[in-house]
Image (cartoon, rainbow, N blue to C red; front, top):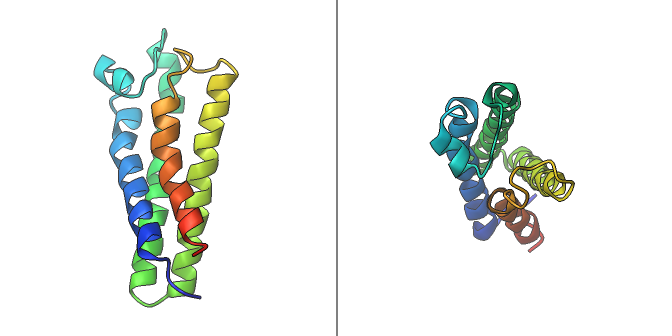
Length: 135
């Protein structure tokens, strides 16, 4: 199996870094107004939402870690396994972004339409990885 091309690798790194930067705001700073503003979320009862915010942040870190681990494996010689891990993490990130957008369309996001930045920020990099991997 060939390694992922440079475009796919850069997109994978960008996606992993993005999720890694956002995760602490979800996991540890969600109770602070600046974090919710950054995340484009308006929560009336913060304590009720912290569990879900923490879990989403943890899942984001796992996806980012999987991506980086896959890239390192690919770069250090275990190309087939590394590529499979990066592709799996990319599918997870893309499908999670689609689920976030669907939740917004269903009216679960407050304010409605607030997920657009997150959907694009977390969905475009893995989409680029998956498309670039075809070439």
